[in-house]
Image (cartoon, rainbow, N blue to C red; front, side, top):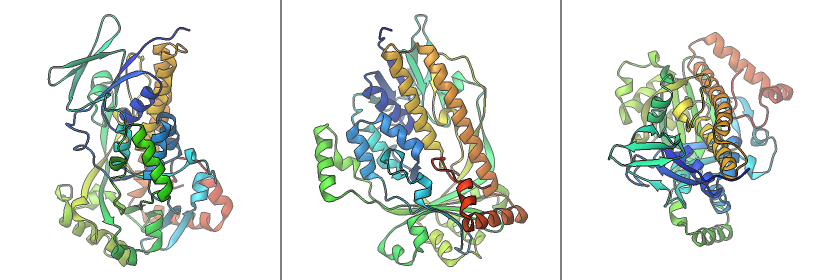
Length: 443
């Protein structure tokens, strides 16, 4: 087949959109990203996220080697595994890091705790001529000759061969293209916060909280997750060599390595009916006080994890999820990540699914550019995989959310007994948690 020159318009400069842009640029496909926020700095925010093997493979595929090396260097220290524990800090089930990775030492198959801010800085690197800020998407128009034009609120337009909606959970692209797609509230309300890992905090924090991810399973109603972002750079020599390579590639290592704060992230969740009616309007100290009242009989160190968190980081979020939809007739407009399959954070799959979509779509469009595939069939094949994997993850996280906020002592007791059995009997643990699955889940 003969090659064809494509120009791809990406609406949204989040993790998925930028990963797609990196993959397309690396493959020689013309791409432009339009981001509604006004600068590369102002919109960067968020907590630590966990990149599992799915996300790691996608980043390795889309990033140039120097940025892949920078990603590994800016990631936090690998966790010591995953623990299911009681509200009194007693282990129910502990899954080692080796079991989580299947004892695979290939960095591409790794598990990486990363700062969302650092990851966005990294994904922006080298895209100065690609990303356009302060561009609020209004609508798209299909042109008679087969092109797609994006119209922005400032009156400007951009025309390309394909338009990709990577504009998040409230995607305007998806609302126009797939009006049947819906996102609904779950019955869960979550509260998140950060405890900074100061020397004083390290002195009293239990080692399992400092070194691994944990899910706290009390007898009923509530759920608490914690994960640590403890940054460990490569050796001084390796870091110096990497910095030199970044500068040689025209990138700023100071910017990529700027976010080095270490902290423990915690997330508390319960059915919305378990909170006072005013809970969603609270933040900071009043919300911390409310959570402390709800976990009044928990272990003192878990209560202190909440009490000593930075009040500025404590905020509520009503968990929402997309309603799965079936296939549609493919066109020159498509979507990725939260734009279609938004999911609750319980399970940590959202960012990884967006990265998976990005690498899959970059691969498909690159094949079209090389003349190895036709455009619409390639987009159709991408969407078929995206629908399956994305909505499978939505269903999994909804099931995790339901279990996390269940108010049944019998159900909680069965789950806790099952975890204890798995911990005691290796063959059950092996059956429960197969390597390379996105995240551990309850039976």
